[in-house]
Length: 172
Image (cartoon, rainbow, N blue to C red; front, top):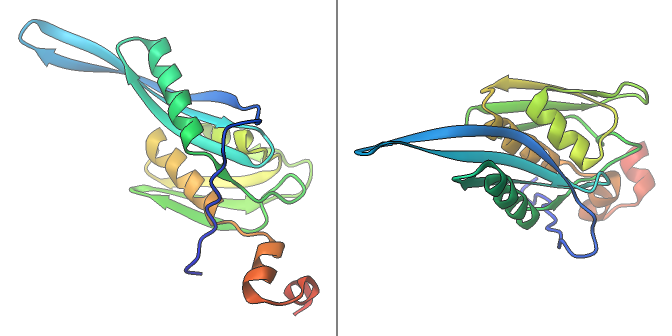
């Protein structure tokens, strides 16, 4: 369990779709008054197992979103998918945010809250049961969800790591 499969992905030849998770106006009080800026959390993915998140900060909303998209494209990871759902149950954690992700039957849909839903749909998960526990801060929820997805392993990688046949993984 010490080796976690975080597969980095290059952005070339992949068509990515971006999703705005959260945008916040931040005020800095100076001698001349309040200075406003914006921070945006953006999730990008190809809806086929590749997902990434990014944070952008700027004086204008559009600039913050553009910076967030650029940052998200630098942090892409590959997620194992199995028939439109996740391969197994997994818990993810980041700071105060905990998420639980469970596989679901075909036709269930994405049962997840706002920030988790954006990440799971961008990754290409169509049927999943998910619960966010602890912090509801979108930053922590997005990072905890990506943490849970990167910890996922499919049967092929488990068989390869154990050095056994694929049938042995399923049938013992």
